[in-house]
Length: 331
Ligand SMILES: C[S@@+](CC[C@H](N)C(=O)[O-])C[C@H]1O[C@@H](n2cnc3c(N)ncnc32)[C@H](O)[C@@H]1O
Image 1 (spheres, protein in one colour):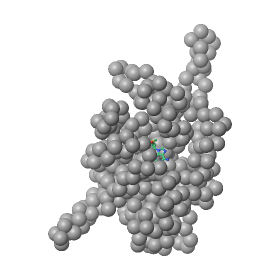
Image 2 (cartoon, helix red, strand yellow):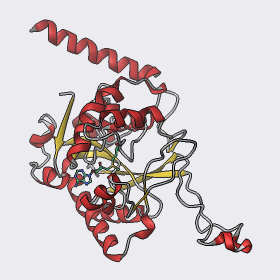
Image 3 (cartoon, helix red, strand yellow):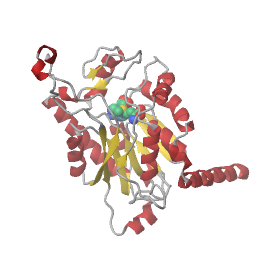
């Protein structure tokens, strides 16, 4: 296996899986996955069919379409301040159900890295806590966004409001880190399930919860734009390869196992796993984003980032290459 892509609804796909009980079995036959690394629809409604249609037509709705700047088209941005009580109830149900399914598909000790937003991350946490998952940290991805920082509406007519903004300008993105509990010692769990811990960046440095320099390079957005078979729109939420490789690297403590992205989008997680020579599974509901991911993943995977220069990463890649070569020679 290298990667497997599924065009479907994550909730239906995960519901159909057998119980995780055999560390030697395939991921979808009782083996489960070693980690989940994902960037879900934060507010859920922004990826409801009617809102995706509006975004594609440039109409807006929950999506704010920022004006282009210096001739550069900027990405649509979902506005989470417009969610009403019903939307929030739906969001809570979504993450409560997803927490249960994530618990069921993970091996004991498996980690979940899930992106969120300051305004809504408590709903994700509530669902995950209720599902019995263990909260471990909130990772900080440094990234300057266009959220918040606006002056009150009509402030240009009121000089006294000139120095007021309603919310801080958002310069970081939270990634919740959860783990499925295991029984006994970490070393036994590593031994039996290859899970429980996080891989260190190197001998000298552990994985840390500050993820610096997290901006998505323009070139990576362009990859999704060129991979879109239906139009030349990029995916609105492409995550950078450097970030996704950092997370995928941390997610497999022994560099063995399967990473699942249940909300794959354009396939940035799968591209990152592939670049590290890890097995992965991506699930995407929207057909055109699924097609986009199929085209974009090999391009993401072939990009180079600073993480690829780490001794740990190079050693693993070399070992994987020599295994696949010897398998080939045996045939
Ligand atoms: C925030 S985007 C992920 C973007 C991705 N990180 C990337 O770099 O391209 C979330 C994705 O989840 C998909 N999605 C929403 N609900 C889903 C569901 N129930 N099952 C599978 N995919 C879903 C959306 O279509 C969207 O592409």
